[in-house]
Image (cartoon, rainbow, N blue to C red; front, top):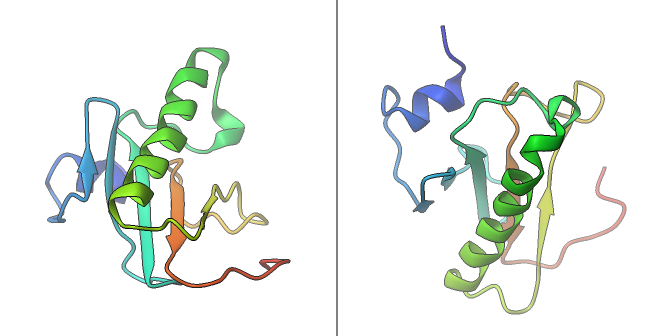
Length: 112
């Protein structure tokens, strides 16, 4: 049994790709917290950043690059935020690492 993000990536759960390549798949968050709220998910299942290993470092960098590329295409020239929630206390709700790209409004600090 695969996780919900694996099912989105393999097409079992329909979604509209905002960006995709051989390493990742990006789609809109179903509960957006900003006018632009996109999830960038690696095609390889990794439960969280806490589970990432040394050989994942290029993939982790690619996720951030993909988020920046999407931000450029969405016109977020005034700024945006990328977030990776890790574990229950970190707010992670799906056990598949993913980058939240949030933009389209000013972001406040602290976030949570």
